[in-house]
Image 1: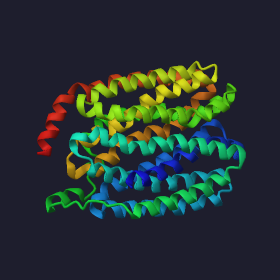
Image 2: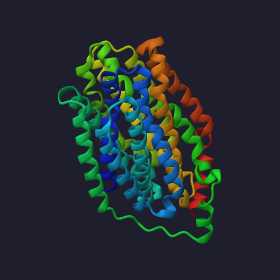
Image 3: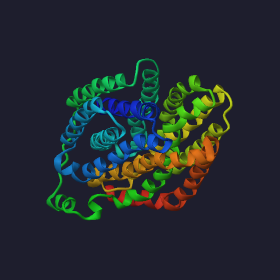
Image 4: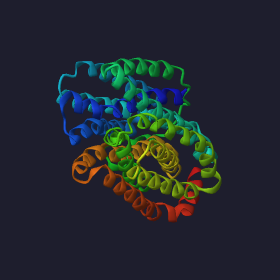
Length: 388
């Protein structure tokens, strides 16, 4: 049920973010950087939502926080119908991001609380399939509706989906978590540690750069495809990405638990870099779709693995904070990525953009080694001791 709720939340997110750049450029004649901001400001709003929910989710309650996020999302989605200029669109996108940040942090925390410790990688991988499916179907429908039925129908679809998400969340069975007085007191106040989980920071820092790299695909692959006359193939890009992730996820999640995170993360990042390089030199539809396979194996494997690492190395009573910390950093990269890359595209072009993004991912491999990979065994043993 939590995966179903999460699926509809992310379906809305991906449906809009994949088509909002084209809509902004066509409707308001915005520049590439402003179109990127229209996509990315949603993620920035997400940061604020996660910052709040990560601190208070254990105090308020996980299910209550989920309800609050979904209700706020319903209100903001209805506000899309009032958009008449770029400024209003940016405000609505930001507010929608806050609602999504609150509700998606709640679903991530709820699912982490019910996954057995020894199957953390596998369980997180299965849950993340709801995001993967949404990332495939959402952009496909968003672009399809935008091309044939008009962008405003996207808002109607999003309204229906967010109501379904609310209905599915009602049936969630969330285990009640008891905290002693000392643990509750430690969650109060405005200390930096009450907004970020320190043990989750290393893997979260790596996710910033991976988020920036993926934002180049999510926000600009359609514009790039228009430039090279591969729009038809691009409409199936996220479908192929999803299939690659669906096929690999059961195996990568199990390998994560049996062989350790390094056995999964290093190959995933290399696949991601290869996929980006293929995109930069694509000349026909088959090659574009083949790059989607590598990106699905790479990015699609890294994110749930990194989320599992963030939760695994953190104290159990700070699970919500670890979840929000990880996604805040990943969202930061994905949120500022389109805006930053929008400035680069007019100067360097799409081909050089994707080459640079591949280099960024390779640099993230080195960063992962120094921040987490080389200390994996020590970190895992410490986590086992703390769990006992």
